[in-house]
Image (cartoon, rainbow, N blue to C red; front, top):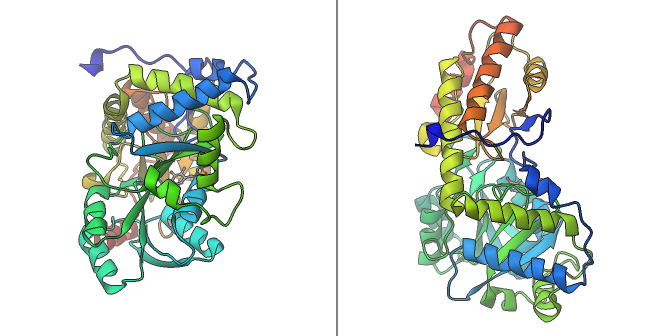
Length: 395
Ligand SMILES: *Cc1c(COP(=O)(O)O)cnc(C)c1O
């Protein structure tokens, strides 16, 4: 049983744990891998890039050579923009499935790209479902592509991408997935879930440091993407074609970040790949949510939609609870938490991803209990209005 497993080593003595969904706490070995300089054109570095791409395509489950991985410099949003600008033709139209900040950012990106876009916005509590996606596609034959957010990191909701994919392909349209905060811990196997391309980044579930993201796409789509992009540096087709030809990134790669990522991939494989990583995060979530509920906190979402990535809690109604004070006290105890990103109610978030396990999560809960006591908060129950809103909107 994993309960008897020894704790993971501390990231580094005295460093706080980042209970944030990227950047997150990384293994010491990952940081150590950055203590060397690499020539971007050199064969040794090209071998790193090649290995990185091969391993990521394998993680997506492609064994037929139908998919390729294209790493892109920048943070995750650069990759989302690169994917949308490269795979959606200029006369295409995108249906964005939003239920939080990242879905809305995808819609905003489409506006910058100046390409046609329509939106299903489900608010903070509920996922877009296959039947409503199907209805939207039936109603608008001009839609060519759908973009879904795998785990909507702003609320922590895990969206049902498999049923969305079925609805999309039953109508002959194409699916793009922002799997930023899910890939590597939650299954997105191309043999089980059909899609044309997905994006993720170095500093999420693979537990690397920030600096690049990657697109995993069907090769036929990569070929067809030639000439679509609005941007030189965000052209996924051009990056791919150049890498195939030279083995190099087109422009300066984040060499140290890539070296660290290779070490992170080694640790990921040693932990049992997607299944092993997902199991640890799930345990982290279960231990943390049970402990926080025992303190009186309530989650924004019903259990059914709680991801093993990050969990949103309502702020307590007690006037003695002040989030910034709570934050500072948690930090002093070694834990950096995350403010909420909701529109209506006050909330905060605790991430389950990064180099930490259930033993660390028990300490997180203990620290939260102590912080409440120090602040003189006697009940962590949320305001009645928040619960009423949840009952109304999550019905
Ligand atoms: C982290 C994240 C992104 C990218 O955010 P950056 O700050 O640009 O790295 C995009 N989508 C989701 C769902 C994310 O979790």
